[in-house]
Image (cartoon, rainbow, N blue to C red; front, side, top):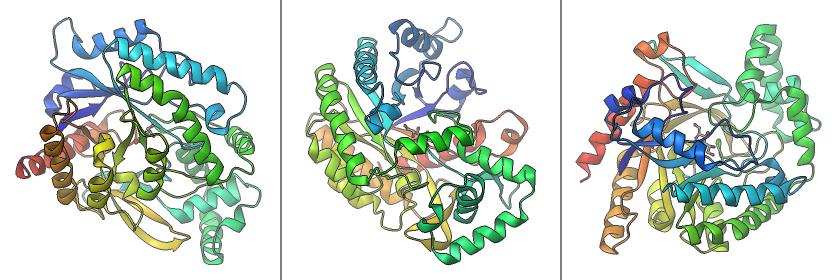
Length: 398
Ligand code: DNO
């Protein structure tokens, strides 16, 4: 697998020079300054390529291999407002990226909130920190801070009781931090909402069923995939993170069955998967090897990350912490072995995309990570440790 690294652009606290020292050989990036729904201009794409390939005028040896993400707007997801303009802009962005030679494009189809955590720096016994999703904290936020209408009906009585008790103990500062962690926009997420914005956004999805949202995803793909296919662009949808409904919003890419349905609806190599073990692995039913055996030929990008579930389960929702890359509920060695078998199959079939780009997804904040500005989930040392461990597994599976 090609070992890539997510870089948020010149505003990222980690430099291209530092990334080189991690041993990564490719970059995953996005034009985060272009508002969702607008066209990515060729000049901006080329500038980012320069920043990656020649950061100080000399070749770095790194290339921009994957876009994560060209965000899909809520207008497209909910089929409201400026949907048509946004679809046309999406096609133009793909054309511009392809013209610059960038052909792997990740996106997600989660309404309103992208990935969600309740704590961004949960202390670890070794002095580092990890990100965590605590279901009881989340329910406290939903029912007592956001005060979403009808929220109580979504939870078991025991969960509500635990959330009420937890909320009663939260100071004002802790309440603010909890809301901030959930809605203030994690890196790579689409937006930076206030509670009022979230309430307004949720209204746009009132009455939205998973079936309907899935139709909207398939409509989006039916329109965009033919353009991508002509351009040789491989789209790859990131799974729901976490893989269960939140805030009454439906989720449509949480399992193998969800992906199988959406991939079959628009049969094309341009309609593919971002295989994120950290997102899918929160579900007890996730079997990474089975997923790869069934849909591996459509996996265009891989996020390797691990999580550990804990606490009570409420309608298949649970708490989880982000673990070390090789620890946690997902068998990473079996996963990597299966992905490398998929690469061998591709080579045997003469596929030009036989080397699948992977990145160490997230990482604990460790050592000097704790003393420098940090994008939650994207520390230098923690990710480098993850990449080093994963690289060792890859060599062992060769
Ligand atoms: C979190 C990431 C997400 C992901 C987007 C893809 O670290 O996995 O931000 O990049 O959901 O669109």
